[in-house]
Image (cartoon, rainbow, N blue to C red):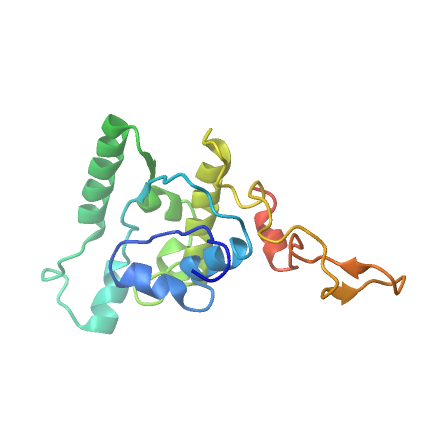
Length: 185
């Protein structure tokens, strides 16, 4: 391996996970938040339930009869509750996306691009819920993005020269302006 290892978030799922790496998607946001972070030697599991679905939008876009839809909001609720119950039994962290997403009054239209796949707004809810868990749990070492040390914390003569013209600026721990939205969790 070239260079040090980095934290890995292994995401299992369907096209909802795949599309999470689109611009503004929740997987892409995590890739950015955890860039240049040191590797943790512990494996942790967080299960995410199915999000709700906007059945009318699915019908409109995919032209599936409402009676023929394999994925219904009620089915997602039942699945979500079962997964949360199982995670409690197994002492595994779980996030109920079915409930979290529906906290927004406009969830059906704002959180999905086609009734099933998450929009940037829906992805922000997923990121916020995962970050809340990562901050709350008492895992050692912490996997909360602000608690993980920078991968290259030492200064280098190859960094940008500072305002004094003598020292360099180490930006490895710098928080970008768009990452600031995740500081209040």
